[in-house]
Image (cartoon, rainbow, N blue to C red; front, side, top):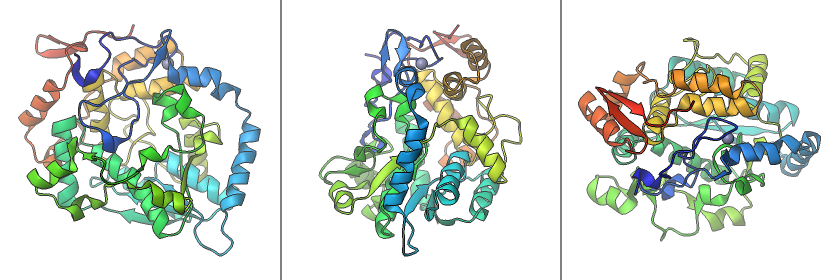
Amino acid sequence: MTKYNLPKKVIFCKKCVQSNQRPNTSPEFEKSSSNIGTLQFDNDVCHACKYYEEVKNKINWKDRYKELEELCNKFRSKDGNYDVLVPGSGGKDSIFVSHYLKFKMKMNPLTITWAPHMYTDIGWRNFQSWLRLGFDNILFTPNYKVHSKLSKLAFKKLVNPFQPFIVGQKNLAPKIADKYNIKLIMYGENNAEVHNNINDTHSPLMDPKHYSVEDYNKELFLSGLNFKDLKENHNLNENDLDVYKPGLREKFEKKNIVVHFMSHYINWSPHDNYYYVKKHSKFESNPDGRSEGTYTKFVGLDDKMDGQNFFTMHVKFGHGRATNDACRDIRDGYISRDEAIHLVNKYDGEFPKKYFKDILDYLDITENEYWEIIDNARPDHIWKRDGNKWKLKNQIK
Ligand SMILES: [Zn+2]
């Protein structure tokens, strides 16, 4: 059996540069380290490309815009209460969604942010620029001791120090909506469009399994460990873990709280969002000209941990940040597949060294421990050792 149950034979999509080793988006709180589903392929074409060809490129966006108007009409507040919750960091996507809803749809959004513990300077400036457009915001900062411990455990168990952030952020929003009596939550992109089975992309709604559970008897995982283990062996208590827990499905259903994706209603493109946000705000792109591990300059800028999220993905699946960006840019018509292959071979897996010292300090590990965990995480069917370097066995050509 291969590590992480990945498909043994590496196949690259004929249309984009994605491989069949790409994990899909099953709920993070259900994940132990061995439980990873991967993106589906049909005849060497990935389901993300199939979705573009068979669905997205045929959508009548005028009709979808009308659907968005109807949705807003249904939820728009008449008494001054917030009527939509927009979770986000102040990156281009959350600025786009909240600005569009407030100024084009005349909604009254509350924005919510799960704060990174290690804001980059530019991330903090972009966050401030976002709020200056005229938004109320709840900035939720998790307990430093708890979150750094969970990040360290997630790095050791899942080789992904970013996982508790993803879980916490996703599960917090519906609970806050409930507290403020907001029925509609609006996210940007439906991740299913880029990593799941084509059938997951038809609904405007996020499947509640991603942010809720039917009951708490179900075993929950965080940082690759179940809650019992976290409490018994890692000195964490119920209060420490509560904020990371998904809410109860029945409660959300009773209150009619729903989570929609803006990408269902608007022809979603990272480039288009960037131009929109540049026009309407003081959003800044990466001052270094591009982010480490890729060729783009406007995605994932706010958290010093972002680079690690993509680097560890490259280690585990041979799929890095440049691949991520290039697949989107091919499908959105910004680059050709040949250009994408060149960019992937040039930048994918580049080590994010800019904040490495901060990361080691935050995770409270030594450089040697870091590399030991990383090198043990490399699956045999993806990596080979060449002298003192690691090389991909299957490089896209
Ligand atoms: Zn593809």
